[in-house]
Every structure is written in structure tokens, then in C-alpha cells.
Amino acid sequence: MRNILLVLGALLLFFSIGRASSHPTYTVQPGDTLYDISVAHGISWKELADLNKIKDPTKMQVGTQLRLPSHVQPNATRLEGTIVDISSKERELLIRLVSAEARGESLEGQIAVAAVVLNRVQSSRFPNTVWDVIHQPGQFTPIEQNALPKTVGDTCAEAVSRALRGEDPTGGALFFYNPSTTQAADYWATKPVIKKIGNHNFTL
Image (cartoon, rainbow, N blue to C red; front, side, top):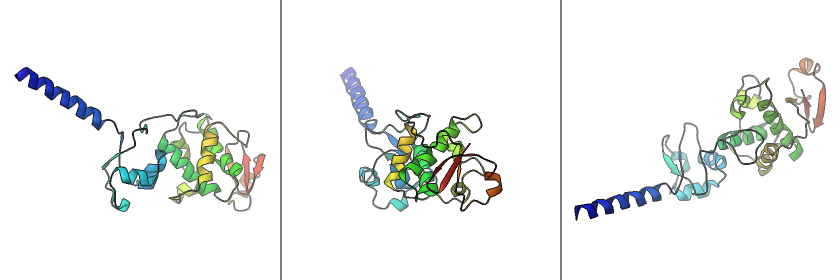
């Protein structure tokens, strides 16, 4: 009888673990918003809120473990089909950077800005991750000013997806600037413009 009870207990433990692991999870980090987390994992914020029975997204606590839909793979270190290693959180950061730098530009112009970041990742002259390239001191004004938008347009996400698949309208540019607003016109005058798209010049 005791052996039967032990077997039944083991089976119950096995099935409870199986049920618990059917949904991947994400632990809320400092500065996270429900929108940020949903974008990073490719789901809607409402789906995430419904799954976790969140009535007030503004009251999320750091350290809270959120359940994610079963199709999400939160620990992936490379998005399928991309030209560089990039996490879902880095992808979301790149989308927000493109929105900050090129929200008024055409889709081509937005792809070009995303491509510059990815070109830097692949260049020996810059850090080798999207996160480190974007946060390199003195490189991107919206980062320096902590001015990344919380919400972005659909075209910014599309632009990043296309750049990640290898699309690069600039032909390999490592820098971009707006000649009408730059504070370093003398410096940029020393750089050959390899492409002009919308309000931005692209250079090596």
C-alpha cells in the first residue's frame, strides 16, 4: 500500500510540474512596463494582462513572475532568421530607437536607421551587441537624453524586422545625421555621404 501511495505521489508531482512548465514566464525588471514586456515577446499587452489577471498595469511590482503564452520562447538568444544575434528585449529597444530617430521618415528611412545599428554590431569598430551599440556613450541623442518613446508605430517594428533580415538601403553605413539640425556640421563635412534618405545623410 505504501509503495502504491509513493507511486501516486510521484505521478501527481510529475503532472503538476508539467502543467506549471506549460507556460514560460518572465520576471518583471526595474523600469519594465506591460507594454515593453509584450512588445519584447511579440504579443499584445492585453493578452499578457488577461493571462495574468492584471487589472491595473501601472501597479506591477519588480520581481513579479508573469506567465507568458505557451508559444513564446523568452530565453531565445537569437531571433529566427536574423543577421545578428539579438534578444527579444534588444529588438524592442531597437524599435524604440528607430521611432525616436526616424519616426517622421519613410519606411526606407526607418529601415536605414535600424541597419546602421546592425552594421555597427557587425563592425570591429563598435561593440558586438545591439544593446551595447545603442548604449555606447555619445552615440544616440535619445539614449543620452533618456527620450525613447514608450509607444511606437507599426512601421518602426516592420523596419527593424526587415533590417534584421538583411535589408540595408544605406549600403553599409555606420553613421547617420540630419544636416539641418546637427551640432557638428564641421565634423560631418569631413565624412563622405554614401546615401541620402529623407532628412538623413548616411556615411562611413
